[in-house]
Amino acid sequence: MSMKGERSIHEMLHNDCQSMNEQTSSSILQETDLSGNHVRTTLSAPATPMSSSAPSIPLQNGNNDFLRVGALKIDSFKNWSISTYKCTKQSILEKLGKSQRTVDSDLEAQIEQLRETQRKYLAILRLTRAFNSHFHHAVVTQHALAEAFSDLAQKSPELQEEFACNSETQRNLTKNGELLLSAINFFISSISTLCNKTIDDTLITIKQYETARVEFDAYRMDLESLAPTQNLEETQQNYTRYKETYEKLRDDVTVKMQFLDENRIKVMHKQLILLHNAIAAYFSGNATALDNTLKQFNIKLKTSNSTGSWLEQ
Image (cartoon, rainbow, N blue to C red; front, side, top):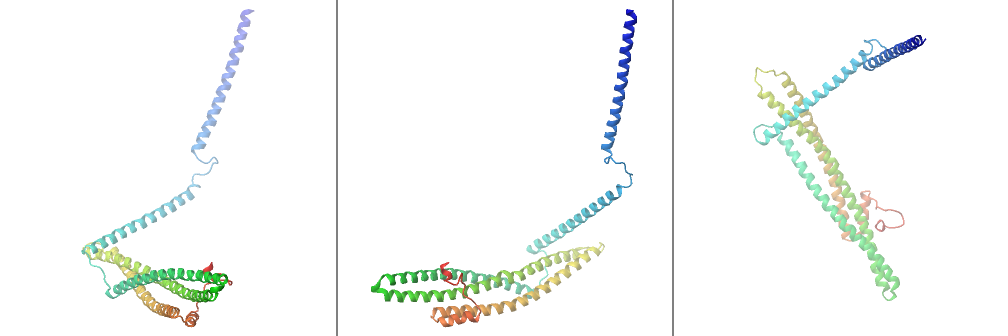
């Protein structure tokens, strides 16, 4: 009995272990399969099955576009580097006197004259602004003095007439001073526009012309230094291209300087007459002439409101 019982118990345990081992192995295989699928899924990128040829077409086109853009950028940087090197070399050789430069004597003399004119006009502009600032303080002081005299005229009956007379004089000087300040401010504004905008615009074109001249000379020297056996086609093309750019900018500078000179003469003629007439009328005490000068040039007195002088603000 006991032997049969032990045998049956051992058989049951053996059968249970075998079944458990089978289940465990099957689960391990299943996990291994699932894990394998997961690994393969991860390595193959998309989980959804697709044909191998379908996704390669847009990806290949994208790579081609990227490579094309990169190649263009590299070529552009290469050309810029070569051009910069040649221009720097040309500039250094010119300063050392080892290279000939293209010279347009008449145009370069006009350019230097223009730069000198701008420097002198800027000096006039600085001095006029300084005069305007000092005179503005003088007019403000005259206005305050007129108010002080007026106040004393009311509080000092024994000197009322004298204080009132001085107060009226200072008020008239203040009024005329405001007119002169308006004329000076108009002169400053016009000269500032001429120097800092009109002339500067022409100088920008001149700077472009000077850069084009150096580039043209650099490629001209390359063309002249090449041996007859070397390939001249590319160098000749670059030389022709930079020569056309140089000649175009030279013509542009010539035209701009001509128009600038005409405009400069017209502006300065008007502004110098304005400044002369306004200052002469003020310091000669001719209030009528001063007022007529501002009307002639359509200059209005600067006011902050209609109730008082702008000097009070």
